[in-house]
Structure formats: C-alpha cells, structure tokens
Length: 479
Image (cartoon, rainbow, N blue to C red):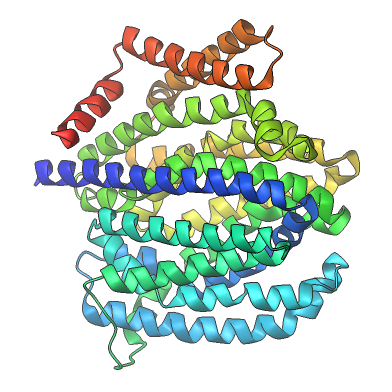
C-alpha cells in the first residue's frame, strides 16, 4: 500500500506539474498578447469585480469538494447531493448578484460595472455543474484527466480572449475569456468523470457534510478577500488605471506561485488524508512535500523578481512599467504561498476546518486594517505591508501544524530555508554578474541562463536528494 501511495503521489505531482506548466505557458503567451492589446484600465475593470464572483463561487461550492475528499468512501449519493446543492445555490446567488450589480458600481463610482458584473457572474453558474465531477477526479487521483481538461480549457479560452481583444472589445475580452474557461472546464469534467448525476435530488447527504464544509466555505471567502483586498481598496480609493497596474503585477506573480501550488495541491490533501491514521508517515510525507515545494518555489519566484523589469518592458511594453516594481515585491511573499497551501492541507486533512477558518480570517482582518491605515501613503507602501503580513502568517500556520503533528520549527526551517537561501544567493550573484549589461534582451536571457545554471550547480554540489529524485522520475517516465 505504501508503494502504491508513493506511485500515486509521484504521478499526481508529475501530471499536476504538467497541467500547471502548460497552463502557465499558455497564460504567459496570451498574457503578453492581451497586455499589449489592452490598457491598465481594462484590467482594472475586471479586477474590481473579481472578488464578487469568487465569493459567489465559494458559496456555490460551499466547501463540498474538500468535504467529499475527506470522506474515506464517498458514495454516488454523496456526489449527487453535492451536485444538486451546487446547482441550486449557484442559481440563487446569480439572481441575488444580478440585482446587486448597481450597488457594486456605486461602490467603485463606475456605472459601466453594472452590465459587466452581470455578465461575469455567469461563470459561477457554469462552474456549479463541475464541482462534483471534479471532486470525483480529485479524490480518485485522476490527475492525468484533470490535466487534459485544464489544458483544453485554458487554450480555448485564451484564444477567444485574444481574438476579442484584437477586435477591440477591451475589458469584455477578459470577461469572455473567464466565462469560456469555466464553461469548457465544466464540459471536460463531465466528459472525463466516471461519475454522473441522476435526477434523484436528495439534499440530506450534503447537509450531513455541511458542518465540515461550511467552515471551508467561510475560509474560502476569507481567502478570496485576502487575495483581493488590494484590488478592492485600490478600486475604491484610486483609479481603474492604478488598480490595473497592481492587478497586472499580481497576475504575473500568481502565474508563478500557482504553477507550484497547483502541482502540489493535486496530491497533498488526498495523500495526507490516506496517512492520517499513521502520524509518523503523515509527517514524513508532509516534510517531503515541503522540501519539494521549496526546491521549486523559491528559485522560480525570486528568479522572476530578478527579471521582472526586463520581462515587463519587453513582453507587454513600457506602459506597464509601474507593475514591474510591484511585481518585484509580490514575488517575495508569492514564494511562501505554496508552503502555506501545504500546511493548510494538513489542517484540512485532520478535519480541523474551524481552525482553518480562524487562521485565514484573522489574516484578512489584519490585512484589511493595515490597508485602511496605509492607503494615504500610496500603493507601494500598501504592497510592502501586504507582503510582510503574508510572510508572517506562514509561521502562524506552522505554529498550529506543529501543535497538531509535531512539525517543529527547526524541522520546518531545515526543510525550507536551505532552498530559500540558495535561491537568494543565486539571484544576488546573477544580478552582480549581469549588472553591466544594458541591452534588455541580452540582460533577460543572460540572467535566466546564469541563474538556472548556478542554482542547479548549488543543488548538485550540496547533493540535494530532491533534485536526484526528480531527475530519476523524469528519466523513468521517458523510458
């Protein structure tokens, strides 16, 4: 069984990595195209209403995906109950938000948000049809099928968005892109899932799960508020142009940390749930996942910060230059987000959804309070505070995980800090070696190549086990 679980984990990481790599590469290509075709104000319009659709989406899902995964043997009746609950809840929420659209527009002093909001909010109605099928794929380690559906969805939606942007549809292109992505994802989930709903509607299994899932729901809402707190406040206190500049930086930052986070999330909770009866093996698995995540996250995010200015100017032109400085700040906390995701997966796998909520909610309270105090000092100050608070909260998560499974601070630092320090040292050395280069194209590629080679050399010299295991697995897959 241990060997089977190990194989499942390795394959899940591989396909999760493939899924996120392809999605982020496609996102990179089309992000450049859209960044050149659209203005900061276009991005700002979408950024201001993203939080509302995300909260509605969380309410529609109600944490049932995590609840189904936490069940040892979920039945067809469980999946069917969750499916019909989601469809009912999403339809209700869309009607509520449809009539709330004028209030949203008033908050941002932007009347054009009324029709845009009503259009964008259709995405969570489409998504409600995929929650249960995706939960089935996730629970059963069907990472390869999830990868296929994710790639098809991101490619098709990106093409639609780029075509509409080229035709001059502005922020409507971004809105349509998100709708197409959710719609295609839902269709593919139905296609690949071996489970399909029946017309027998019984909410009782969903209600039995609600005690656990409602806390996941509350936490997801808090998380979305945390992630979008700057979009909300910048949209209210500053202009759509300023909001768009910040959102562009956040989008590129999220592309990087989602590459790692999505890969690990593909397997983390199912693996930790399977091992929760054996705390020693569970902690061992958590530590190995933590080392693997740190091995990738720190060089990727800090490396992107190293080339942020050159990348932004060359890829989406100098009109987005204000985003580059903000991006260089955001990647610092972005490197810790996949680690937080792992720690929170352990909390969820132990059934501690209440603790999961309170840790996340307290972060939101601190962030909102700080942002309200600091907005008179400008966007840069707000971003710096946002980064620092998120780094501090990494250790808050660790504190509670330590109390639950005995993951000591020394063990945590031993698993993460060598990679963080190695990546930081490599980026500093690369910056010094390339500081005399003035040509932006040469500077960009020189920094990428030198940083990759230096980091690989450091890992080889230090005989890092994770590196050798990754190399062995890749060659095994080729054979």
